[in-house]
Amino acid sequence: MDIQIQQLTKSYGFQKAVDNISFSVKTGEVLGFLGPNGAGKTTTMKMITNYIDIEQGDILIGGQSIKSGEMNRHIGYLPEHNPLYLDMPVIDYLEYCAALQGVAKSKVPMRIREMVRLCGLDVEKHKKIGELSKGYRQRVGLAQAMIHDPAILILDEPTTGLDPNQIIEIRDLIRQLGKQKTVILSTHILPEVEATCDRILIINHGKIVADGTASTLRKQAQGQQVLKVKIEEGPTNEIYEKLQALEAVAMVDFIDQASNRFEIQSVAERQSNKAIFELCVKNNWVLSECIPFETKLEDIFRDLTLN
Image (tube, rainbow, N blue to C red):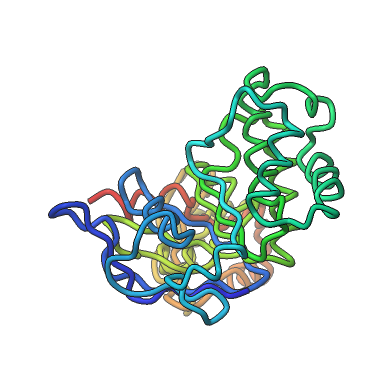
């Protein structure tokens, strides 16, 4: 089920938490929703889930406005601060959540078993939630978000408090769910975005500042291909001059002159790997390194949000 955000705006007093943003998420897509604290992520997610009212604009779920209230049943939501009834046993809590979400009584036991299996709760399922570790409480929160088998999942920091093994398991689960559902995932863990999400949207000061795949954002940030190369068995100055003369090369700089290591910037929209290799073959030089410099997602995030 697709989500369409149309010119969405929300203010708190004189401050616009969300400022006229528009984007869409398709069925079978996992969208990584990034931004610094106070950027407007959680406010946007709360409007999508109908937890708070829309000030301006609209949100369409499967083509129907969220304002009607009819589309709430298609959404599963894991808030940033996972609200749980600590005195309830896990099984009782999931049964309660299933009833709240309108799951047919005949299907509740099956749905609980499925959530216990998917979220790795079997060992802890008879304990009270208050007796669980933070990681297992997070799993319970994820289970309640999925208990009614929603078409859309809104997950705000879903791996908070999980250990590395649990994080990997939840990432795998989100990827599997993303093949059939529409998922919006908010997180501060940037490697998690690359490991889990099909697309990244970055918001800052309530406005969208980037939207695309990780590779697309890198290309936009980098602009030009940058290579680190090491060429052996050739005179340094001659290598430098011939590299600089290549049509696909915009600039050559020394990294370490003693070992013939260079940083090479390609001409915009072009790649110089092949030309460098052919140059080395032609001159009987040994190309022992040719490493593309890759802009880190952390650097892109900082560049777009530090203002």
